[in-house]
Length: 310
Image 1 (cartoon, rainbow, N blue to C red):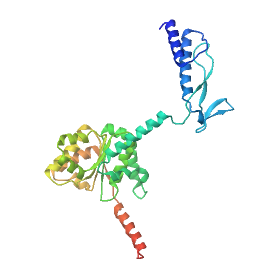
Image 2: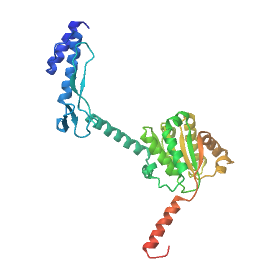
Image 3: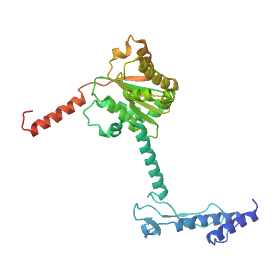
Image 4: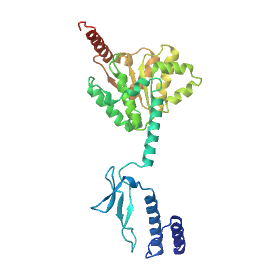
């Protein structure tokens, strides 16, 4: 662009925004001054003056809300330029920031609805809801898995929680689901009984299985609780194998024992369990049943209310 073209561009900007810049040392500097003046004028027009005050020490405007700067002094980087006071952002969120945050929250809520469809009660299971009565080593391990999910997603590595009924396996899985969701990953949590019902009625069973593979993390609760039939055995294998082939991690919970997982004589179940054990860390969750403990506390409170011995 020639000097004449630069001058013409400057004059157009000045006329459009009603800005009269000082005479600069060169035509290129004139354009820069004009553009700077234009930006400064726009910032001035959009200022929230009702939330400002003048700092007597610096002579600059500050925000009454956060105390941050609303003005700063800059010197344009060209010869002959003089320092000038211009508008700047304080630490308060802008309307654009608030709009982006609202959009993010809507996306997150939608992702949660999809993740916990059919198991909505799991939405409230988060690490900060842990009552501290469980094995804290298990909680820590679950937290670390979620925090380092990027690595586990790359390696296709998951977890297999096994142990007696009511010991907190599903709670751990749901905590991980919520934590990974918060990082922006696609997560789906369901159980084998629900999968059995959905795949039975699905018109496109291959499409249903393919859909389960599009999630970054798939949670499958209650392995072994599905209907015992050759058909469901095959469907469970196809789901597990599809994730295995895709290199996509799964987290599975089960009441099965290690012997049932590793020494089953049924070749159909064996090939499913082998896939899981190859790509999932086996973690035992045992101890006192949290469900029974909760029921015992409830009965104890009721007895006290009725004046009966506990």
